[in-house]
Length: 206
Image (cartoon, rainbow, N blue to C red; front, side, top):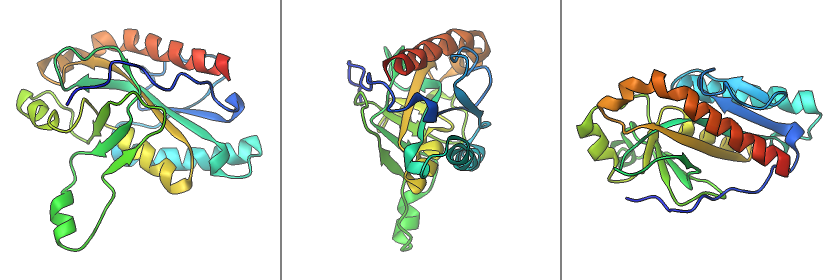
C-alpha cells in the first residue's frame, strides 16, 4: 500500500463558524487558531466516539444550525507511518477499524462497518485501533491495508456518519509506528504546528 503523493482537501470550510475541530490531546491541538471551536476528545475509540457525538449536538445548539449536517468536523492529530518514506501531512481518503474481528462477526451473521470512505482525500488509508503501535511486526501487518495508523480517526468518522455530519481527517506523521513511537512527546509540538497551520489556511479560505 502506498499513499498518493498529492494532498487533497485544499478547499476552505463552507461556514467556519460551524467547524468543530476534534483532537485526542491538548498537545496535538496546541497551535490551532484562536477562536476555533475545539474538542479534546481523549485517547482511544470509545472516548473519541462518545465525546464527538456529544460535541456535535452541542454545536448544533450553540450555532443555531438546523441539524448535525450543518456542522463540519475536522479531526486533527498525529499518526504513525506504516511505510518507509511516509512523512508530513495526510488527508486520508478512507479510514478502517483495524482491531475488530470483522471476518468472524460477519461469519456469525453480524455485518458491521469497518471502513469509511472520506471526501477530498489524498488517496491514503488510515487504520484506527486502541493499540498504541510500536511493534514492527504489527506495523508490517497493518501496512498490508493502510498507510497510517492512529487511535481515534475511525471513531470520529463513524460518529459523524451516523449523525450525517461532514467529516475530514487531517493527520501528521509523528513516527514510523515502531520503536520510534516512544519519541512521540519530543515530536508532537512540531506536528501540532503543522496541523494548526493547515486549519488556519482552510479557515482563511472559507
